[in-house]
Image (tube, rainbow, N blue to C red):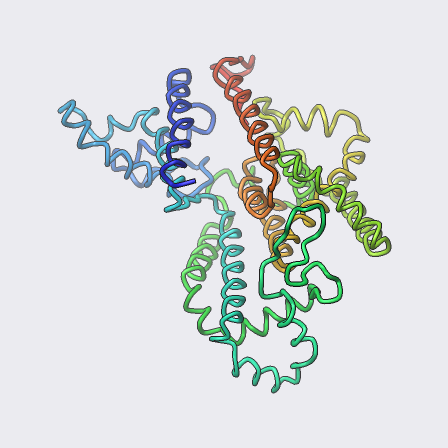
Length: 440
């Protein structure tokens, strides 16, 4: 699918939704009561006023200002009395989201604003490092004689290294869905498939041999990381405002919720995965049983000791998570424990699918990055799951067209239902004036 086609498809649903939202919801709603006035301050040239309830840095407001400024010449000619400040209406500022969505669909930029995205930046950097190492080994241009001499000096050039280079370690896992595990480059064979420790050692040695080349290539990532560390030290927290409501916590149950939500969103793929996962348990009973026991133990401790009910979650009935918490997880004191096997199966299935396409070290890095993003967050929100879920989708092969259509249909139905509730089923709270609307 060409970029122009993608832009057209995105525009066909983004623009109508923007028009409907602006028609039915004319005033700022929910978090917009903080963000839109802040953007309007910037439109007036007031860059010193800051709402203490805003938790994110001001990048989005600068982007909105640039977007509004680009519209100003045409609007000024249409109405000569118009000023830049008067253009910054609720509808215009909202349209920034639509414009960014369309621009991002070109694949030219990826706009990320959340502070926790620093973790995903590091994950992408690590993935890039591994890819560079693999490419350099494939070409034998950077890791030739120097790499061998270094290994000899350390007394580590053993049969282990020769088996790594002869195996499929340098390549991404390729998988053919013909009902059996792929055997390309010997990846699936337990006799020549390198272990996790082997992969770590291999990457470490090659990383050292390519340290200067990689340092230059990934220097911009290091600058962003240093800037983030400086911000946290200066601010005393990863969020700017409302620090008490966004305090870092140990919310290990978030990982379990994410696993189950991700499997539910890709249910056709994971249903196909069930048979191969069951077969793997039959072939490796002792190892898999040990892993299962450890996972169940972790799930119990995460649910019992590290499950957090944030005040926002308990008080706000405008979100799916409120009803999932009240009517599923907390419907009975035993329910949260009965869900543990489903949580564990979800993660077993996720890891199994990812390992068919990726090296073990990549899968391990993905799980760690997901944990670093989700565990510190005390509030359960689907938006926290967005980036790890997208990465999971991108690295989960969906070979059957019927599965793609089923997943697409599922997303369309859920989002149409959500937009219907938001636009046409408003309600009121007795303790707060104004119209309330259901959102994700």
